[in-house]
Image (cartoon, rainbow, N blue to C red; front, top):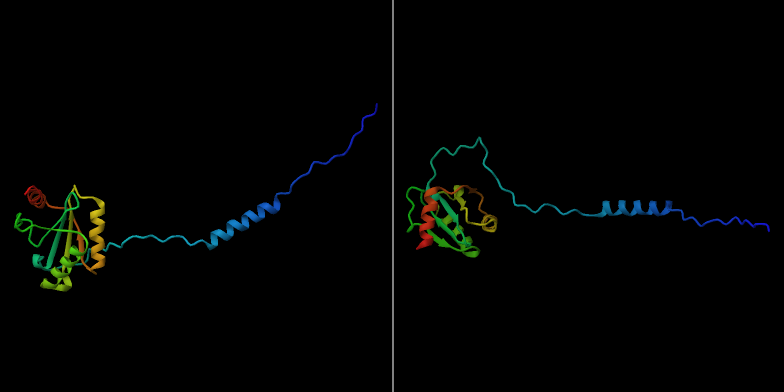
Length: 162
């Protein structure tokens, strides 16, 4: 018996238009997407060429000590003169804002009023960010983030124990 051969063609899908459409869609979304911008607070550092010329007057500064358990203390004295009676506790938020504004009004030179932020090892990152936010809220132009002195640590720990 003779075999019948049929020329059956298998259907073939041409993917070229689909690839073109894919690249058009990718191009469209890349060009129309708005990327999120960074949300960081600028931290202005003093220039090396700046010279103050006179020693810091503690009446013109406010030192904030960030302690553990979301506690915050402040003083307006040098580390040598500091004792537990001069270290006062306050709280975050509007209380801290009012404190900064009040101390700025009482400063000898409002233009050079400086807030010194000193986080302890027990404080957390959120506390530092909260204080930096308060600097922005109160429009405090001059603030410094520095290490805490051993004397301040000692006085702060003795104040917490009281």
